[in-house]
Amino acid sequence: MLKVAVMVSGRGSNLEAILQRQREGVLGAEVSLVVSNYPDVKAVQIANDFGIEVFVCSDRKGNDRKEAQMEISNMLTARDVGLVVLAGYDRILTKEFVRHWQGRIINIHPSLLPAFGGTLHAQAEALKHGVKISGCTVHFVTEDVDAGPIIAQAAVPVFENDTVESLSDRILREEHRILPEAIRLFAQGRLTIQNGKVLIKG
Ligand code: GRF
Image 1 (cartoon, helix red, strand yellow):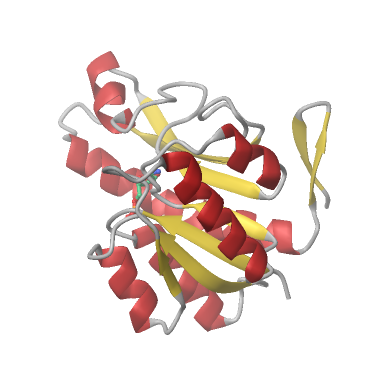
Image 2 (spheres, rainbow, N blue to C red):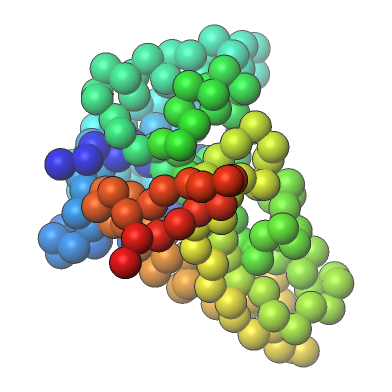
């Protein structure tokens, strides 16, 4: 079965949604490692609760990002990981890391890319621009931040009285649906890239 590593930095609600699907037996893959760049975040707690191995590797504060991510990459290889899932990982990955895992690394972003890419505040930006529809995107990770080939998207309405929180919650419910679904498709070998575009086989 495909081994998956999920990289996290915070709340871990996407991680939890993935692990729930795994528990229900419908993920079609096995999360064998959670990588966090912070030791005390909720996502690490969730991984522990589900009995998943956690690798904490800080790539901040004095620690060289390149070196730290090399360490992460080596750990992923040692654990025979076939798919890396970024689920709220708050650091830009080095080009070496991305190149090594290219085609085997996906990210979830809380907007309909290419709108509001490259920011950690996509929902606030959506409200600021007064868009009427927003959503989320699962995409392959490439060296261009939030600009890799799109795998799946889900749209949600934006209401006049929305706050960042209410919009984020609405988007998050869709994230929790499309990210595990993308993992399942990848595990089934149904995702291919042709001319920079993702094709999903029947
Ligand atoms: C999500 O909104 C995701 O789209 C973004 O970071 C957030 C992570 O949330 N990349 P959580 O940690 O999964 O709850």
